[in-house]
Amino acid sequence: MNDAPHYDDSLTIALLRAREAVTAQFREHVTAAGLTLPQWRVIRALAGGVEMDTTTLADRTVILPPSLTRILRHLGKNDLIEQVPARDRRQRVIRLTATGQSLFDEVWQVSQTRYAAIEAAFGEQEMVVLVESLNRLRRSLKG
Image (cartoon, rainbow, N blue to C red; front, side):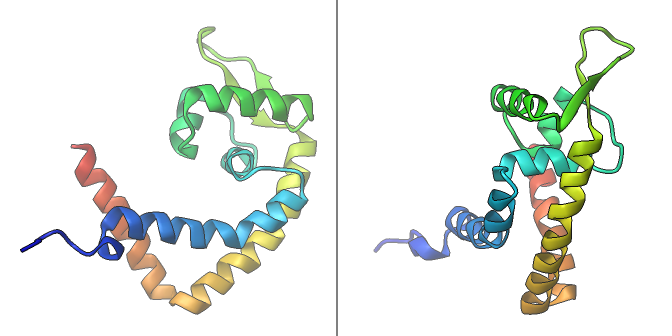
């Protein structure tokens, strides 16, 4: 007798499918703005005048450092981000430019409507519980 859970009931598959369903809600308007979803995550993390070192930014956006380096290079070439002086010269600190903040503001307007639609479909309280549960799961597995 096979005691393995049914494939579709696997936690990893359920998480991957949920991630794809959620990101699909944002892909079109982010792409229309000339961004990839990882580039959008970087811009979103830096929105509102936040300055962040690249190590923290990689962690916050869930982007591997080599990929983040390429993303930052691209965003810099498009005048969306800039490097700012850091106390520790070994650190690279980044912030949005005015152009980057304007792009964020534009894309965020559409994103907010998409988030509202997701919340309406799934339920506001269920969304809060889901996010809290996923964050608790992540923390418990980090040890």
